[in-house]
Image (cartoon, rainbow, N blue to C red; front, side, top):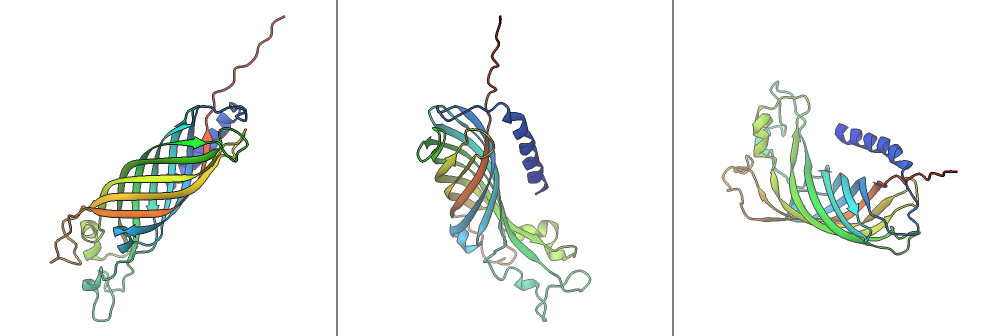
Length: 254
């Protein structure tokens, strides 16, 4: 999260550098690069719904909108949440009192949270409607990329030998594969200033496979090698900065 905070600060500083280069976009569609940040909330479906509940996406994007309203982009997203639906992961580590104990015999606290990452290439377009200028309107894009998700296992400052280092890999359900996505919403580009945003509905389809060869909580059950369909449906809200070329200065001669 520190890296994301640093990135947001750098983007904010960069804004002041490009502000004076902005020009009025009210009368014509312009070609311009975009950079921005966004948040998404997603509900899992398909195979992913067996593992996790609501997932957050925080990401960064860069793209380019042409004067003909074609959009090309790249985004990267960190996925996180606090709802794990799987049960019984550590039943074989529980003692007769119903507790997991650390190396000192103290009752241990084990936290399990969904984590993931995805990156996407996108292509789409913008259709000017309901806006103050020709650079605002219905915004649609889709594309493909890479998806990774797993369970993060934390034991705080306690040492639990069965859950340390590589032993965590036997429980984390690491899964990777390709993904596709679709977005439809509205994008607003201000005539000037920082009031540039977009928002809408988002869907993602992951075609993934388990990447571990054994699950320690199910040691006698072969790990499935079948293709998984990891679905997510939700929304995305973003703020972006269009980077304009500085207008040439006029010179007058007597």
